[in-house]
Length: 281
Ligand code: SAM
Image (cartoon, rainbow, N blue to C red):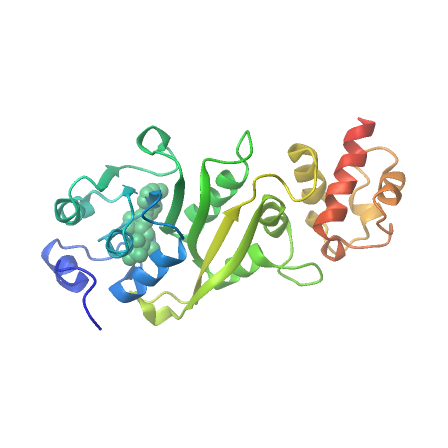
């Protein structure tokens, strides 16, 4: 296949800059630039957007995003060893790549970005989930991003897109699907990465909806859903007992049988339940 740019292959970049993967930073690198270009394309309209990339590492996905025409990429990377490799990419794409060295959990990137903004990242699992939850729970909706294109362990990706009645269905599915549409766009075997992790991965693409699918107060919805799934084997009349007085009346108002379990309840019914509880509070 044709090269996506005329920068050196990633194996050479890693060798030249001594970027041996560090376990403590969750480093599993993608070296196939045709694959990273494919992930970049899944992010949507690149020429019309600024892209926030978290954890560029040696720059595989960064190069994919730039080669596919991203207007601007702002990349935040914790590992200072990657800076020289990323500077070479910035020099190759003048004015289109800005790199910030630091922890994405601590840095507010918005001052450096012009809307529309899309997020793309291949992050360690724990950081990825924490950032996803933050991006899904901003103070106001719609959020700063149009879309999120994120690599996760396959099992986490399944939890994000899960439907009622499945084992994977829970808080993450409700959080993600209430105000966004989420789908798995690519599956990757462990061998796609260097070093290979133990489990398969998947890329999830989330698009922000202009407004929530069903009205509900975010704090009440979050509290009710958390209580329901914390004791997912119990019937809702028991698991939600402490959430609000008269919970059986609220369940009835939301058309949810009191004997139902959390994993059987769809998004619309959770929102109806949250509205009933909010109205009584
Ligand atoms: N994007 C590259 C790729 O696809 O090959 C690297 C992916 S590697 C799984 C994750 C990257 O995130 C590493 O470069 C790591 O140093 C970086 N990283 C880990 N924690 C971070 C954090 N809190 N903030 C910013 N970058 C972080």
